Length: 379
Image (cartoon, rainbow, N blue to C red; front, side):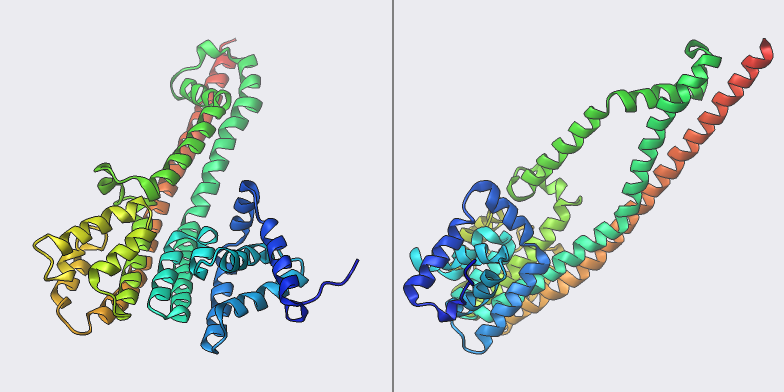
């Protein structure tokens, strides 16, 4: 097999041909989803940090991408296909690098990177995307860490019911017919039989709920969403969106873009959920009674109520853009702590339910044994 050569050693036409080939290997719906899944938080953070380091040293974005892609290409790393696709779109379609990255990264990260590019602060945008990604990872770790054990115990409890139905009940029924089981024993039989016979119903419910939740999180904007935003995971997503919005808006405004143009730029990049809030903000700025106070104009429910009030109070300060940016970071840190508290509360509730269920299972099992003993004594 011929040894691959680094991009730096290739003539331009050869280099473009390799980039085109790498991009082609990322084509196809299933391939894209698979590579995007592998392009996870940890890998994206490393990618953003490396790009920012190159930009800080005056390296052009395309040169930086080629350098990174070349190493992955030599190592047969899947990231070469992703970065190759980004490079191909930049060179072939003449789109900005953030637009070429759009389909490979989460929308919130793209919004920040694109906003920074509009303001000429690409390296800062990549660092802010890194910050947001790390914070999102911390949120997920907090939730996973608190809820992993209750979920495991829930699975174990289910398996205990199933095991009781498959292994124990047939033996007990040989001694005491089912129609003579009474009270909690009969209920235990019914519950364990239902869980064993209709497991596919529970699996269907879990899959269905997961699909519905995944769709509603970025798309649902009906009045019921206001209620859902008070519950996880919608409340967690709202926090991430509000922080992304604040960082993106402050980046555009610090670059000198007017408020309305900044909001319209973010609106184009946003999903239906965030766009719903942004359209109301734009309306407030252009025709509402809040057009003289940006803090009041953006107070439409996306940002936490007390923080939005602070923005109203400080809207006329010359340092408002920086205040908005710094507040977003403080808000995210506070939100992470609040989410940890909520996750702990959920864990405690789940543990209580599990302990109570386990206690009932053991009590019902003991009651069944007692009934069998009484039946045996009667003969």
